[in-house]
Each structure stands twice: as C-alpha cells, then as structure tokens.
Image: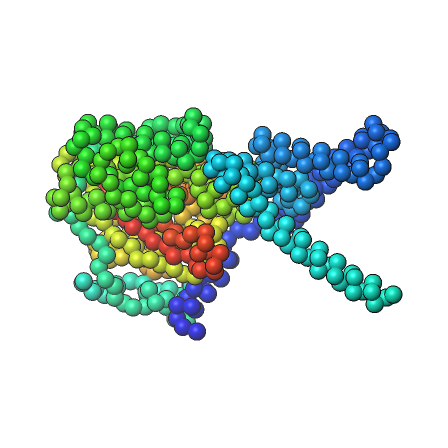
Length: 154
Length: 358
C-alpha cells in the first residue's frame, strides 16, 4: 500500500472520529412513535369503515384503508407537511405505505416542470424504482423457495 | 516554475504518525500565487439571498432578500436565473459604470452545463466566459478577472455566481418534498447570488494576489460530508499562499473559506495547526456563518452562492468601511458529480483564493 493510500485511510479514520452521528436511541424512539401512530390511524380508519359499511368484507375494507392512507400521504406531500414529519420519523414514516406514496408523489411533483411525459412520467419512479424492482424480485425468489419447500413436503 | 522549500509542515504527528502525506513530505512545491502590479479594484457588488439567508446572521448585509422560492417564476431554475440577473445588473448599477463599458462577464453555477449563467449572459449581452469550479466559482472568477485586468486586456469585468437550494437538491439529491432524513453532518445549499464588478481603475478594495489551487483528493466519498472532503484542498491552497507570500495567518485581518461548514472548518483548523499554520480568531467560514444555529441547517451552508453572498455583502462592506484591511478569500469546491460518486469514485476538491486589500 503506498503513501497516498495510507494518508487517505488515516484521514478517513480521523473524519469518521470527528463526524457527529445520528443518535440511535432517539431515531428508534422517533420512528417507533411516528410509525406506530401511522398504524394506529390506519386501524382507526379500518374500524370506522367497518362501522359505516358493515356489509363489506375485511379484504375490501383493508383496500379502502390503504387507499385512504395513500391519498392523505399524497395530500400531505403536496401541501409540504410530509417531509417535515419524515425528517423526524425516519424509518417510521418511510416504511409504511405512506412513505411509498410520498416518494412517488414528491418525484412527480418535482419533475412536473419538464412536462408530463419527460418529467412526471419518466421521473415518477426515480426514488421508488429500486423498491419496486427489489420488491418484485425478492418476492419472486421467496415464492420459488416456498414452492420448492412445499413441493418437497408433499 | 519556481521551486522553493516548504518551510513548515514537519510536525504532522497527529494525523500522519509513521509517514507524512505526500503533499507535505515533498518539501518543495511549485509557486501557485501570482501578485498583481496593477491590482484591479472592486467597484461594484451586489448580493441577493433567499428568505432563510435573510434570517441568518449576514441577512442584514444582503442587498436584496427574496422570500418566495420561485420569485414569481414557473420553475426554480428560472428563479435562479432571475437572482443572478438581479445581482449582475445590481453590481453594475452600484458601480456607476455603464453596462456597455463592461467588457466581460465571468460566471458559473452548479447546474449541469452551467445553464443559469449562460441564460443570464444571453440577456445581458456582455461577452461571456462561463466557468465551473463548483462552490469555488466566485474566487476562481475573481482570480481570472484580476489577471485579465492586471494584464490590461480589459477595463471592467463582472464576476458572478448563483446557487439555489431547490435546483441543487433536485440535481444532486432527492425531490424536495421527499421525506428523507439528512445526517447531522449534512449541509444546506444556499439560495443566493453574488456579483462583483472589477475595474482596472477606480477606487475600492484591491485584489492584490490570487492563488490557483491544485485538485486535492484525500479519498473521502461521502456526498453528504462535503466539509471533510474539501478541508484538505483549502489547506493545500492556504499553505501555498502563506509560503508564496511569506506571510503567517496572523498577517491577515480575515481568512475566509467558502463552505466547509462547522465540521469542515474544525477539520481545517486541525490540519492547519498540524502543518504549522494555526488559524486563530481571524479565520471564519462562510458556510458556518451564513445560517444561525437555530435555523436547523446542520453544519451550515454550501453551494457557490454561499461564499458569493457573504463576500459581496458582509465581507466587502467591512473592507470598504476599513474594519478589515487584508482579507484572504479561499472558497473551496467539490468537483464530483452524482454519477462519479455512484461509480465509486472519491471526491476531488479544489480551492482557489484571492487576497483582497483595502
């Protein structure tokens, strides 16, 4: 290893030692209560729908609940609240379905200036693209594994 | 090229225990600083900022503060163009020189293909030289303009630069409304434009010297930790300047770096004291002072508007009023792109500087 590499390594170590890091406990607590609150609100919406439309089955109510949460998240993104919540919430606001809605709608909003085709349509998945690709890929892998295992068990 | 012996820089025990870095161990360096025998003077200036900058510590020195992000335009890019136009025309106006007498417009910005500057140049109708040196664009522009004026090719040159939080964010990071967390060592791109009009004659602060920096890369690759990447570049150029001019940090009333932020300027202090040039109370960083602690901008400001607005408002005001007699302005720039970083490249940085004397 030559001199420059050694210097760079040492400098990176030094930088690492002086760079402030995020407090894990604080992030965990924040994401826990914000993520938990999102789920609680989802549950309340679910129960409300069940109470208003007693004739619907659980699958339908779940879908309506998701749709409501997505709409609210998109509305919040458009009004500029969501990123303020997310700055504190971290994974708590990123993981639920609302985080996905925010990622798509923020990109669509941002690139509207380049037009509906080359802007919004092209860039809409710029942030969530990896989530979609990996989601589909790994669920396929999981499905195949499940198939093999359940096939062996038969 | 003159080759002189590096007088200091032997006591780098702290960071470089077994062997000194290549940069310091060479014990020789090429001359990087030029001195002007007909130093050009700063005859006009203007600084335009956004709302956040207006609320910051230097807010009251800004000539104009825009509280609307898009300044009534359809896109943030157009707003950026508006700000630069405003700064450029304002600087010409404040000097009392006619627009037709301005011979050259040297400008740059952070956007791909420096479009903002080129659109402004189209509307100004002044011969234009576009430059890119990331956040050190302002000091590079001043250095180039001073050389041209000193040589007598031109009489008046306008230097300007601009950055906008929203346009930089969308080019280098994520959509504005996307809910992501920034690490505590991130910096905030300054929304603002600064312009300086230099003249061969005239009264005003003089630019007496300029240092062109080398590209320095100490192997950092965190896009969010720009201060730590750029500190070695600032160190390289500052040491070159101190050696070329035979000065010490204490000989300056103010040593100014561009946008190292709080973390970066702390690292620079450490590096400089290791190299034998401890920076005292007279060292400040534009990124560190542009926002207040309560403004939640993490380590401070960044972007080429950062040092451009601070220099063209607070610093030059103080030089003109006589509070500062000798100022070293060394802006730093990180010369990476989003692609180069995703491809695993480290961040090359540069620092160009000018010496401003009252």
